[in-house]
Structures are given as C-alpha cells and as structure tokens.
Length: 167
Image (cartoon, rainbow, N blue to C red):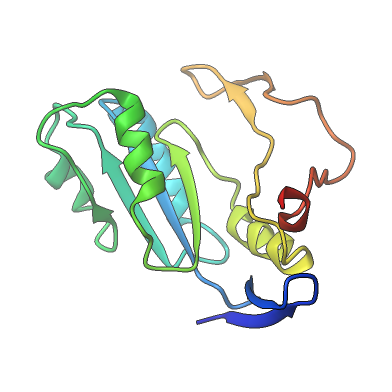
C-alpha cells in the first residue's frame, strides 16, 4: 500500500521507498493527564488530512479511560491494567508494528497544528530516503500559553540526513 520498490545500485538489492499514498499511524503515549490528553486527541482528529490510524498507548491511567475514549470512536486503545516505567510504555509504542507503513509517536501533552499530517506526508514525498522526521514545537504552560520554542526558530526546513547517510 503506497510502497514502491527501487533497486539500490550500490548494493544490488531492492530497498523500500514509501510513496505519496503511504499511510501514517499516530500513536499517543499517555499517563494520567486527562486534560492534556483530550486536547491532544482533539488536535489529532482535527487534521486537514486525517491519519489512517490513531492509537492511544496508555500506561495504566487511574481515570475511566474506556468512557473517556468512547468520545473518539475510531481511536484504538492499547492500554495497560497498571503502570509500568514510562520508558517501557514509550518503547512498546515504537516497537509494536503499526498497521500502516509509517509511524508517528507523540505524548499526551503534544497538540498538533491542523496541517501537521499533510506536511509530514509532503516531507516524506520530497525526501523518500528519509528514515525519520521530527518537527519543532512550542512549549506551553498549563493555561495553553506559548512560552518559547523547543528548538531555535528555523527560517526553513532542516534535513539532517537521509537513510543513505546512515549506511
């Protein structure tokens, strides 16, 4: 689905290159931050180009998660009955194979710009050999007010390297 194969002239083998139609699964890791989680889910479900799959990797939150998630009928809940170390929950979000060729992982206090998914897919189309994509973000306080960028503001996109650079 959305994937084409091209020969790698240097190694005489075929490598996978994701095409423009490749689907993206968004995984949100969460633990006991209901207020932020609601805002994160609303931003995920309000994309101008919807994600193909949205999954919540909850780490044993102590509120009624099933009732909470019922407001988002297409959300796939992958919860735990009791908390594990946060690194274990994040690790399972990255390690379990997604239903789509591409995977995007965020935390429950990350809110997405409405065009995030469309821009992510456009970046992957322009740079088909890129193995990972990241973005800048704005740090916000508990009232939702911006209080600085997480990375220095960049005037243009920055490509740190491509898949071929890692070999």
